[in-house]
Image (cartoon, rainbow, N blue to C red; front, side, top):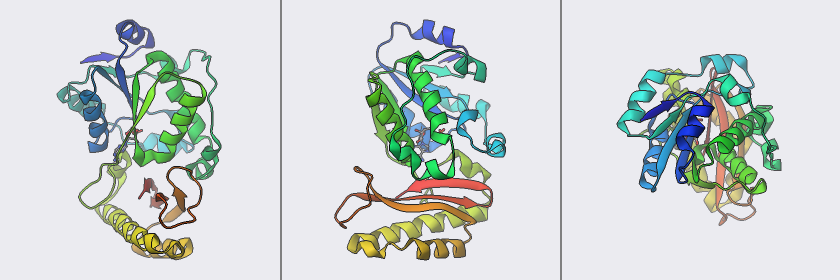
Length: 271
Ligand code: AMP
């Protein structure tokens, strides 16, 4: 496992490697990240994991400062998984070069998290675009847990004709249904239980919506979730998973998208 902290060293190291699978992360690694890495290890080629808590994608300074970090533990996990390269840039390393590709922000960036986190997706695409230019990976592995993020990265890659294929990976969950997330480390035991109730409620609700779309009543759902102990709900919306339009027919393939707060911790999911 090679740990690399500068883009020049990184580029020297991977210059002639054409089959890199890349997994961008913000560290605080958990079973969700591990599933992406294992999937990458099953592809032929080298695996490169980056860890960088990207300040540009945080719309709230306190959220950035409180984001859970544990590099020592992350490196132990990555070593155990036998990852080939770890890229650990600092702010200057990753932001001090000019990019020839302008980022492309699809109109879906204005929905869901785009409404409640101003500038978030611009920040995400800025950093991912830089990583793609430096690394030129054959594959980038992304989690469907961050569905909107993965969708927007895919759109950017297609629009800018970047020679990297997106591999979407399913959401890995705790036994109680809550999706693994680095932010879960900021939850109290009680908040973790509330998060579980939210997911179970949404799963049940999805079954009802499958029978009849009018069973999706966001005002009612918001009220119920607040009764469980949810502090605030940024959005709860239904979209067709392919067209990203509102489903008109119960047979469509749709997802419930949610962003909610447990005290100051914001969680997102899609069911
Ligand atoms: P993050 O470190 O939160 O930026 O996440 C890095 C990558 O891991 C992103 O592609 C996420 O979508 C993915 N990821 C995060 N949580 C999960 C999860 N529970 N299951 C699968 N993938 C995940």
